[in-house]
Image (cartoon, rainbow, N blue to C red; front, side, top):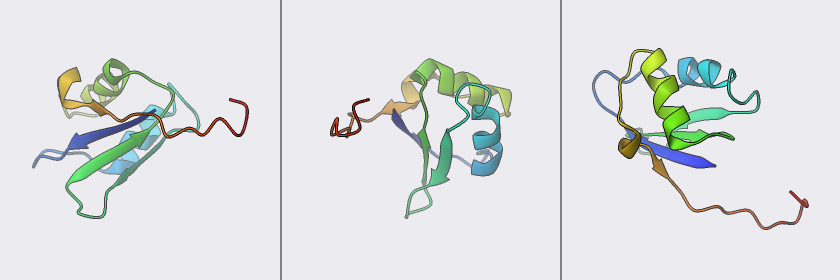
Length: 79
């Protein structure tokens, strides 16, 4: 799933978030969008899982701040 989280002054480095996400999903990816104002997370996780990881790295966010995007899966890989 893909999630978007609006950044604040206390936001962690995306690499730190990605490393912490590896505990949930070893294929997880975290980066910034083109504006640099939104952290994007792609992981096999729930919004609550992502919020929990963000709390672990020192960025407490409520699960409702973690916006889950609709799936863009085409089904072509059979997954």
